Image 1 (cartoon, rainbow, N blue to C red):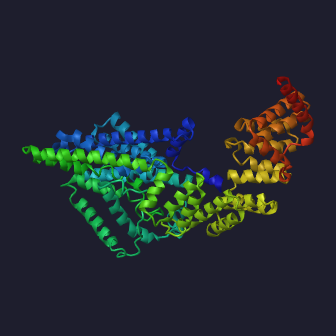
Image 2: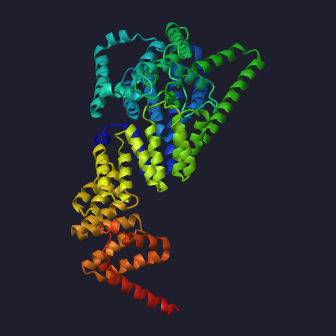
Image 3: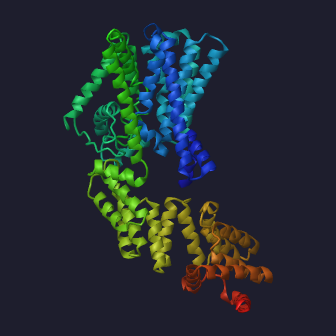
Length: 632
């Protein structure tokens, strides 16, 4: 159910950070972007500290200590300003990737400090900090579970440690660490009620590729990632890459070439780890940290933000090699100047490309126009651009993009078209072409029978047409699919009020998150339901809260006036009527809307009784007429 899914422990650290952003700034995006940039800055600082410590306090110091500061700084800057990181930093929701990356590198740094520190309380504290930041990384995004394996890589490739020997030396400690990691994973699976088979394999039923096809495609994706890191011009970056699925080892032929190339790189890294420790470590780190999102797991094929952690040490061997080149040409100043100038130009180029890429992320329109331009034969970019046009009232452009989306291929889900059918239905409903809207809603339901919003919107159409029974039928279907959906429950509450069943209305309105309702509509409905049941005190509270949310809610003001009239509070009733009349005089549209609502026969069970209100309305009108005559 919706309730049980809402109670799952989904990436709690990331979600808490979003909750804090909302608490302090609600939906103002500036605060979210500021936090994302701060996270990226902290991650960069700890990446620098890790590399600097690695080059100074391990056996690498004899080779790199003299230039360790500049190697660490340049390798970090090349990673931090690389345009491929834009998606993890600028895209607000991908804070999950960058926050996991920040805690990930912090954990590795604390572990390295612990390994190179003398035994004692400081050593224990650093190990503890490493473990805590590992948990925070895992709580930000699940792929941080690979961190212990990254530490094993560090031990084997850089610290020249033999893990099996260490386990034999410290068996109790090793068993405790192993059990803690295993129990953490089991706790996470149990608290989220995860069905391993369903999560990772059964979901392939709804993918346009099989698990085997995904496995064969990912080597090509990894090669693309590497090329994007090395040559990240903004024209190559895309939120929605169009990549053909590999259907066999030779279709396309780049599949087998990519597999062999990656295999050769991994074999080289393992065999040459003693001779080229930095190169081999960074290579294996890259592939290891793509092991979850680029393997058999039931995920979409390609996203740039997945490179945030894997690319952290990508530039370390490149920069180390660069300094070896500078040392080699120490007596040839021109060559040194050429190398330095090249590095400066690369930094300027990366910075400029990142700057340009952020313009693409300026808003939804620019982002999806860019995606449509780069992947014109994908369904999703056209659909999302259509959604932007739809939300901003450009109905013709929206319908055009939705229609194009239905013609092109789906790369993520087999049922993606249902969203386009559903949104076309919404579009026709928005322009009051209800019959067309009904057709498209039913097409959406045919593809995705478990989509509650389509049933809910169909019910709204039937309610407009006065077919309460059919509206009730579809709302009940929506309710069964998602019992705590606020809109469905609000609509059921309204429907039961129209049917003069206030108790049932209250049951559903209590499930509609009435206090999070920015318009105050559900609060008004709760007031009406309690008024019908004779609970006037509660009704007054709800109507007052509804008016606080929307001071132009004339019907709620008139409802209050009626209650005061019934309870004999004449002066308070007069004041509410005066407030309502003042609003009507101030805005003709409010007057017309309120009058139409009061005259609407379908809403007779929701409106105040004009029989009760007419005496005080006449009295207020007479008073206002007399006051106007005085002015004349």
